[in-house]
Image 1 (cartoon, rainbow, N blue to C red):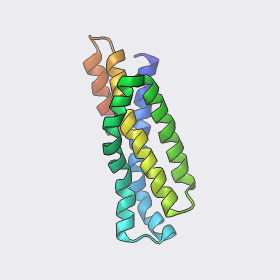
Image 2: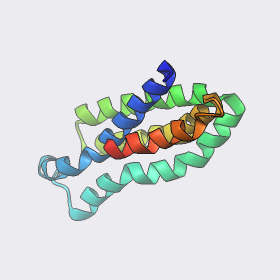
Image 3: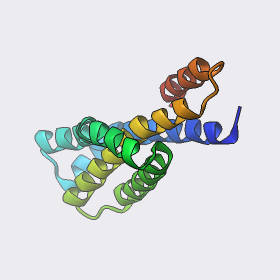
Length: 139
């Protein structure tokens, strides 16, 4: 397996862990920020909504600038958003960080999988792409 592929699998794993890590933290955030059920639900759904919204534009950006470049930029966005989630002083900052994470995540999935598909040799492309989903499931 080529090194860039392995790094992408690690990225997908971390992306999924970060996406779902909010679930056990919601009770603590609810207490810390005095969240209503609606605000707690918004916190849980923010990343997923941003993933859906970002996916199509991410694909178009990948076509224009190259999937690898866009996937790298998305990785930086997701990493910065995870850091922002960790240090968010207010609910608004936390919600913004989760939205930014969703943009990065949706772009990673659009651009990154496209880059992976374009980079894989024809004889291993199916296996290479199948490992993305397997890695996400493990995450």
